[in-house]
Length: 424
Image 1 (tube, one colour):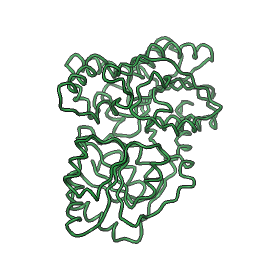
Image 2: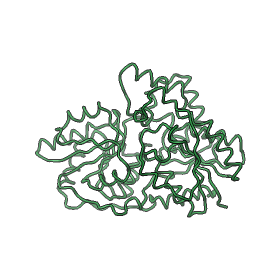
Image 3: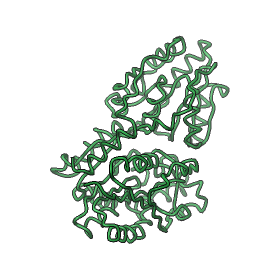
Image 4: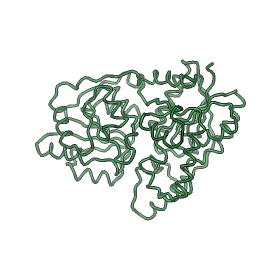
C-alpha cells in the first residue's frame, strides 16, 4: 500500500538544473498517487551548486516535508567562490594550465566518486532517523552526484527491509568527461566497485533512457530485470501563459551547458555557408560556456550573428525558447554518447518548435524526438543535411507538425514512478 517515500537528493532548490526539476516535479505530483514524499537534501549554505535558480523555490509544494543537513564542501579546495563551482564535474572547466590539471587530478583520485560525498555522513545519519521515526519502507536516491548512491547503499545494509530504488540520471564511470580527472587504475577500480555495488544491491534501478539502462546493466550479471526507464519530461504548468512566437529575425537557440567536446563544426560550416549566401540569422546560446568555446564560435561566424546569455532562471529560459525560430540540441562527441538525453529535449517537445538535433542518430534523445514527429536529426558532420534543413525552416511558413506525446508529461511520468514504488 502507498505510504511515505524518502527521496534523497543533493540537488534541490535553490539549486538549478534538469536534475533538480526531475525530483521537484515528482515530489509535486506523487501525493496524487497516494505516495507522500519526504525529501532529504543539503542545506544551501553548505552545498556546492554549479547553478542557482531561486525561482524554483516557489515550486516546492508547501505540504511536503523537506529535511536538510550540513555537508562538508570539498570544493572549497578549488574555490571559495560558489559561482565557480564546476558544472558537470569539470565538463565546462577544461583549463589547460597546470593548476587546473592538478585540481582535476585531485578531484578524480582523492574524492571518489565525487567531492559532494562530503554530504554522505550527515545524510546517512538524518536518513536513518527519518526511517525509524516515520516508518519509511521505500527510499529513492538520485544521482548525479553519484556519491548520493552510496548513501542508499549504506541504508540498505543498515535497514535490509527497505525497498531501495536508485535513480541514475547519467552515466557513472562512462560519463563523457571522466578521463578529464586523470583517474589512476586504482581510482578507476574503486569507482567501478562502487558503481557495481549500487547496481547489485538496489532493489530497483531507474534510468532516463534505454541506452543508459543497457550501459548500467552491463556492469553486473543478472540485473537487467531491475531496470525501469522513466525519462525526463515537461510540466504543462510551466508553459501556461507562455506565448510561442516566431521572431522577425531567424533565431536559432541552444539552451544548456557546453564544452569543447560538443561537436559544432558541422553546424557552423552550414551557418558559414548560409552567411556567404546572404542569409541572415542569429545564433543564441543560453547557459554556461567556456571562453575558449566562445572564441572558437566567434571565428566561425560574424559576431553580429551570435549572442551569449549566461545561466538564467527556468521561466526566463522557457520564454527565450518560445521566442525562437529553431531550437538546437547538441550531444557531446564521446563514447557512449547515445545514452545522453538533455532534459531540454522534453521542453523543446512541449513548445512544439522546430528542432535541429546534432548527435548519434541511434541515441536516446533522437528516439524521443522521432517519436514526436521531428525530422531534423543529423550526425555531427552532416553539414549539408543541416544546411538544407535550416534553409527549409527559414523558407517555410509552417513550423511542421509535432506531437506533445503526453507520456512525457510530468504527471504521467509520476504515475509510472508510483507503479515502480507499488512493485509493478
